[in-house]
Image 1 (spheres, helix red, strand yellow):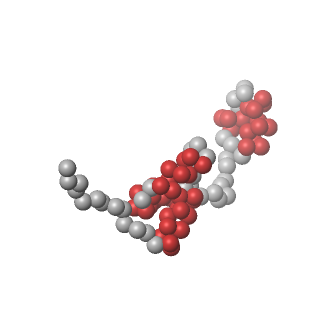
Image 2 (cartoon, rainbow, N blue to C red; image 1 turned 90 degrees about the horizontal axis):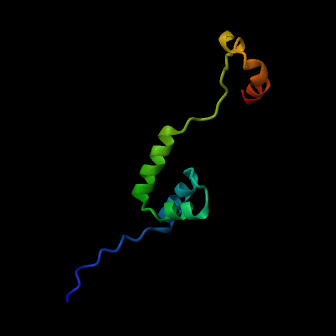
Image 3 (spheres, rainbow, N blue to C red; image 1 turned 180 degrees about the vertical axis):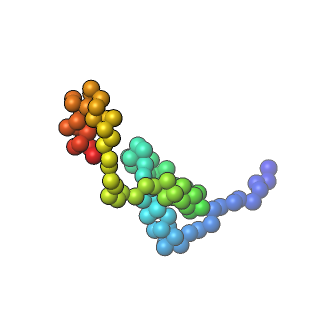
Length: 90
């Protein structure tokens, strides 16, 4: 039996490997554990860049926002009970 040509993945430079691992650490993970990080770190750079771009497009940056409490909300019977917790959240 003759074995066909082996297709080894191309070797990556040290800088590319560091870049790939840094991207893997940046992407939020669920569950956020070593196993999930290992899965991301094992992905090739192209696939990881797609995951990173997908996450970056969906990311909503934290910034100050103006919250307006409508009078219809304060008129609701449950507002008296939940007002303190709601204001703490906002």
